[in-house]
Length: 115
Image 1 (cartoon, rainbow, N blue to C red):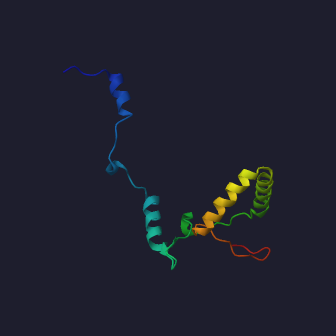
Image 2: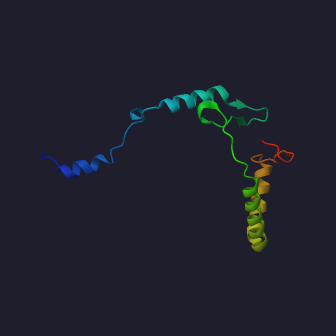
Image 3: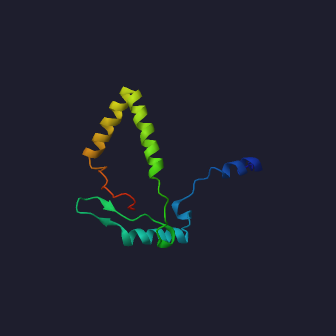
């Protein structure tokens, strides 16, 4: 049986499928899975809840993005006012999302209060 050219063998190696067993798990992956198993909870309403997986289990101090969120809201309002069909689709989508329980109204915060 003749041998295939070396270039054919080299190119074919790029497409060799590997089994899942060939994948290695990093220590970060192990810690993350352990974190999930210890912190994920099922709420009374049937939804699952877990904290955000910050590195080193320390919650970073995130910047206040209220100003940016307000600017994005103003741009959205302008777009929805300009395009009636876009407004109708957006409204229907949001109403359906809330109806299904996939979104809910955020609790009110007093000014300067952090979440």
